Image: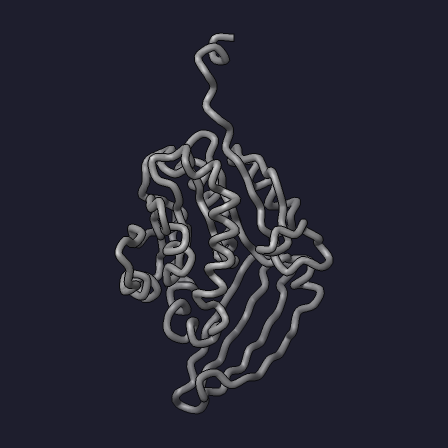
Length: 262
């Protein structure tokens, strides 16, 4: 595996990122994590650990998944985001791990369920790295475990892309420029924060995967997609209208001795 030198996400996920998206708060995360926890409950119990929150950010979802039964790991590459997760208070907290999702530091079959929220999948320049991520997820899932992934609805986002946006965040001028690159299949966002000598410019990129493409990626990793939702209210996925594409994929159960003998 070859890691990019200074990829965009190494610079972006810090204080400015958190300031730009204030709506991504604990209340929103609770709704999403409760949906995931209830949906994945039958699968989570098959692993030695219940949940892996892949690219957990500041730990908003992981702490909700951890309530009651525990057995949750939050994995994040950004040290700045992970430091905020570690500062969360509570009598019992998830285990926080800093690592790259392309090379998970866990034994095969560790987790009953893996979750990946808010389009943290598809960030790499080489699409082969996305395949590696799904393969790693499949590897750390226990037989009979499940993977719940959440990305934007590519067809809706590309067709309604707002090219320019200007707003004020925490008293600071923010300019956003968006474009879709059909050659790389990526939605690219340039974010300028501040003005004059204090202006900082960041990049945010994600590959625009369709439902069909993601189903194929899961199939290559021996995961079977069982359901597609359009949002965290459990509504069915509609490629023209749904804001999100949330896939539930399952790893096959281990064969019994009788089945292996056939």
